[in-house]
Length: 325
Length: 165
Image (tube, rainbow over all chains, first blue to last red):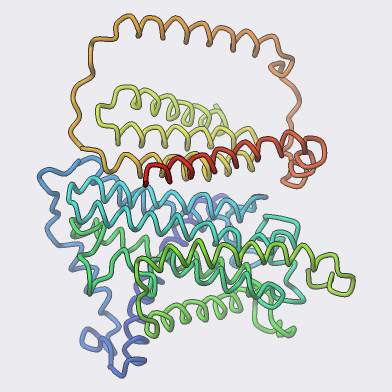
């Protein structure tokens, strides 16, 4: 039974993630529609429930085009390189005290390391298309992802210092009394801004600013290869929201001792709040300018994250605060 | 044949295969990508040796950071490359001799070292113990290495600024 679960578990997780992506896209369009005073998709199926399914079917039966002068091998390879890390990072995510695939000691670092591989996929995709818009889009996208990865990693160092471990289970265990969003509020703000940027979402969606530029690195892609890039993006939303829940919102721990709901339900509730927050930000914020983008990462977020590390180490030594740090 | 042996064979074939592709590829981008592949397979071998931290750092620094920097630099070069030049025959033979000599020396050292003797199963050192060793026992070499990196960083900035003027 256990061996069977070992092999079936990832397949089940993949199906859950695909189901999440299908309905996250619908929910995003609905929520943004309501915020902007529109109805959102409501034609396909009851209440628009089959809208994303129809979109996916459309993408799958589209003609598979490859530009004549493209580097064909890399062109085919790059959606795979972009998507696989998005799913692989979920292996260390503790969804509840029982539901976790591997419990390695350096779980947090593993997430950061594997997710940086996706940037290679994006760069290769932009280069292999042999199109100058795709090339420049890929470079912009990679520059943004590299720049915001540094504050993202720096902002969680405060938590690592507090817990004294890189293991995600230990981090959740340490939050039974206080969630880290309260003592690490500066780290949380830096983390959430950098994660929105890592996910290429508004206000940092410069790589694919639909209304201003051609689509960026995936301008030559169509059909299911394009679907794979989009899928990678939404699976990263799943992974990043899970990580936010685990690091700052206490993971599966119940707030105020409300343990009548099982841990996994609390996880799903917190996870949904984070996902909703991402939609809310997208519907509200305007896109920032490209020259402000890099300056913001290097001149604002990085110093603030470093200051947070120093502050945490200082507060760790204050006697009556050691309970929180 | 257990799973560990299977994984080791897979990773080593991948690592060597990536290196062979690196040498045989014509386009620079393919070279960079196969190099990244080799780095990634090496991380897998580290993982089999129970060095989790080293494996993850290998992915973060080499497969992630350095490969991306290389690809970033190569991206703006022209995609069509001229064929390999044939004018360096003597140079190639010299390289072969030096590399073979280096390989022999390394092998000699490895076989003479007691590390090579099969020992009892070693369990992976935790991140805490790596940190303690690094910052307590080897604090001065660690700080020297960071100063070296800082000097390189400042030097790169100075060179880049000189070019701008």
